[in-house]
Each structure stands twice: as C-alpha cells, then as structure tokens.
Image (cartoon, rainbow, N blue to C red; front, side):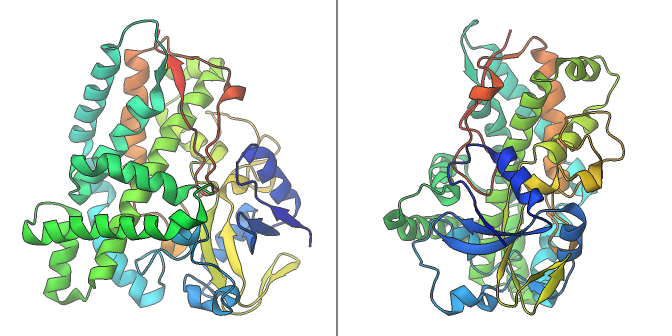
Length: 402
C-alpha cells in the first residue's frame, strides 16, 4: 500500500482528496510531523467504520503511542490526545458525558436560539453596511467569525473578553505550522484559560451549558473537573470553527456558480440546499483525528491492523462517486438525495449539527438580502487555505459588498 503524505500547507485539498479516494477505501497516510496512520476515504466504508465497536477513541490502544513514538511536542497532539471528554471515550462513559450536551443541543432547544442568532447577524450586517463603500472587506473576519463565536460563547457562558485570547490559542492549536517548542505551552495555556472559565462559573453559575455541567457533577453524575474543562474546550473549538468554514465555503461556492446563485436568490432553490451541498462538496472538516483499532478490521479488500490509528477523511468522502454518482465533483444546489455525513455518523456524530445549520441558515440569506451585489475581491483560485489538516479553512475572504 503506497503511503500518501498529507500536505501540511494544504495547497490543494481537493486534489489530495482525489488521490486518497483513488488509493481505495482505506489509504495509508502520513500526517504532518511524520506520524503514520490510515484514512477511510469512501462513504460506505466510513459509515461502516464509524459504527464499528472495534474502532475506539482510547489513545492507549494506539501501538505507536504505547511505544512512545508520538512526541508530546507534535503539532497535532492536542487533536490526537485532547484529554478526557465525550470525544475520547466510548460506550457507557461516552453516553454519560454526551447526554447533557445532547439535551442542550436538541433541534427544539436550538430553535429557541434563533432570535438571538438573528439579532447577532443583523448587528454584524449593520457594521458591514457602515464601512466605507468601495473598500475590500474580509468577510471571514468581519462576519463569518463573530457570529458562531458569539453564539457558542453565549451557549457555554464564555465572556466576550476572552475571545481574542481564544482566537490566538486556537490558531496555534489547529495549525500544522506551530513550532514544536511552543506546543506544550499552548496546550497549558488553553487548559488554564478553560479552567479559569469553569472556576468562574462554579462561583457565579448562570443559564448556560458550562453551569449545567458543573451542576450535574455536583448532583452525582460524576463529571470530573477534567471532563468539564475538556468538554467546554471541545464545544467551543468545534462549535465555532465548523460554522465559520461552512459560511465561508458557501459564499465561495455561490460566487463561483452565478447561475445557481441566481436560482437561490430568486427563491427557486431553498437555502437549506445550499447548506447541505456545501457541507458535502466543500466540507468544513477535511480530516477528523483519530480512532484506533482494537483488532484487525477488514475494510474492502484491505485490513486496518490492530493497534493502528484511523482518521476519517471527510473531504474525500464528500466527493465519492460511488455515493453521489458521476457528478460528485460538481457543486449542485438541486442535488437530491444528498445523504452526506459531513457532521459524522454513529455514536460520535456531532451534537452541534443542528446549531451549525441554524446559524448558516440565518446568516447566509441575511447576508445576500443586505448585499445582493456582493462579489469576490480576488479570483477564487487566489484564496489561500490555512495550514490546518483538520479544518477546511481559509486565511481570509476578501469581498466587495457592492
């Protein structure tokens, strides 16, 4: 099996995803930093593995980890070993940690957040409208970033004053270019910041999910301080990064497909289709780290060996012709059915999927209603991917509002 090295600079994500698919449903890959693992790259096999009890989240199953081959200053260590939370456990422990979060993020509960999301969106658009006409605007920084960060912070009870520091630390957390000597301190700083937030909520509880997690631990649900801190970090990280990329990628897709944009703005195609097709075609999450095989697992005509690590290559899955037909590589807002798994599948499916969809479903139509003549300020080919293996993320999105 030929090993495919993932590009740490992410210069051609979709070309790399095509090479992964061509290697078969199970590809042997090298993560930045020289770490070896396997990637599932076809839709059907991914659905199978994501529900296979032999594939677990316990890093102690990983042979390379047991042998001490994974250095603690590896730039992706925070994603491979983020501490104990619902992301890193299975079975009964996973259900225990996930229950409170899932209850807080049901579709019905999330819908109650709509009015607040609409108000935040309007405020962001008002700020954009007040900018001098004719100037380029970074739509990511000025619109796509503030909305999900404010929403998830309100949900978790995080003070807005912490946003700049969170942004700085998460930039390092996700980047493959963080110098190894800075990784341990970055991880310690993230832990200290989220510990401070939890301590503050313990002293002054509010109507937020962090306070609910603390209360549950005090009521006998046995959540440890580590579990609370790590759950808070997980939700903040995943809850804003995915939605930022969803909004940005949807705008790029519409701007580069003017006939389809015309259909959407004319009301012929619902915004829901735009969101689902963006999630499939240019998914916000390119690769998810990391699962481990407790025994040999057959994947197609190949075998994922016991003790090896597995990543899920969602960027490759979204354009799998076996699932979506010969037009899998095309953006098509009329595609039906569109049964992607961009938010995962099985027990660890993203509990924040409904919230992300709601935020994009409010933000995108409001943006185009206010600025129907919006245009990219540079050719799409000049937009730059950030060096982040897990997130399909741009440095910026320069636009002219029109």
